[in-house]
Amino acid sequence: MTPVEAAARRPLVSIVVPVYKVEEYLPRCLDSIVNQSYRPLEIIVVNDGSPDGCGDIMRDYASRDERLKLIFQENAGLGAARNVGVAAATGEFVCFIDSDDYVAPDYVSRMIRLTRRRGADVVICNFFFELPSGVKIPFPLMTAHRSLTGEQAGRRALDLLTIPTFAWNKLYRRQLFVDGAIAFPSIYYEDVATVAQILARAERVAVTHKPLYYYCFRKGGITGNFQGKNVRDYLRAVNIIRHFIWDEGLWLEWQRPYRGFLRRVETQLVVSIQSRLDLPLRDRVQASRMASREIRRLRAAPSSSPKGPDHGLDLDAEDVFRDLVPRGDAPRKAGPRLPRFLTLGRRRVR
Image 1: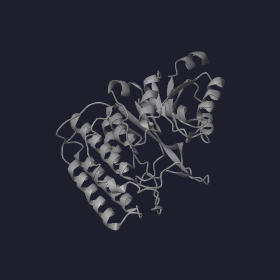
Image 2: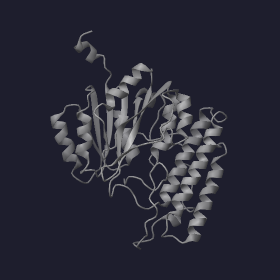
Image 3: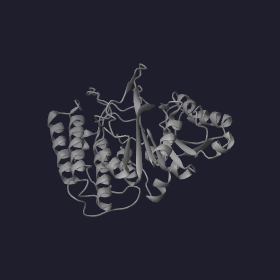
Image 4: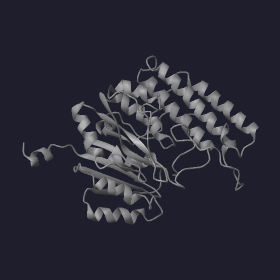
């Protein structure tokens, strides 16, 4: 086989990059993508109504690299931007890279190689936490086996740590989104609600423990206060997973990991609520108790199965957690800051 023939047989990979208020970091992200050692790329950059200079940066890169496909839309959130990118993708595989993160030069080549060697529909890589100081810390808990069935990987994703439910750090066969009519919901923790579903629909999932993705913490890029919407949306994400398990006939087989998942979610919620030191202790205790009550309710099988992109968003917790919304412009004391994989308070601002 000639080099030209070999290149022609390499599958096209679509990379979806949602963009919002990342003018300072977008060039680093795009540089890491356009300089990939794997060249057959379709780079779909979705400007989600970013009010800064991101649009000009995108146009500059597109003028120099014809592989870039630019999409501009009004601000609709991270989940919607990813959905638009997937809808525009034509590659055999698709992956997501957050626009304030970046990837190793061989990120795509290593991932695509594993799709061939292990016949995988999804490939998962380890990643670095990169602190504002530049210090890089590899994620220490990626202990999943290197080859799993999709059903095994879906169950392991409920563990949250051995297979974190981030949309990024994964390469997906695009047909999984098409055949399963999978879309990210318009909530925080949209990846928590979606990734387990995608994994469970795969035939085979491959895992590499080598860190290839750089998840960057940045000043001003994440919220400092855990609010009622965080609680509501995480519970809604759990509800979506609950409906998926029920609808797919996995309720009995997944009971043990699902119950463990609920226990971890409850712990995360209580820790994050108690970190709101600007609130009276009485309010924090009440909110924690109500969060625990909602978790207990989510242990039961769902009574109905609403469909659509916001599948399962029938959880009404507005009144329960209203006191977690910041009160006016009163000064707030910062609560303890924990890594995103241990708490819900550190979310990128959208």
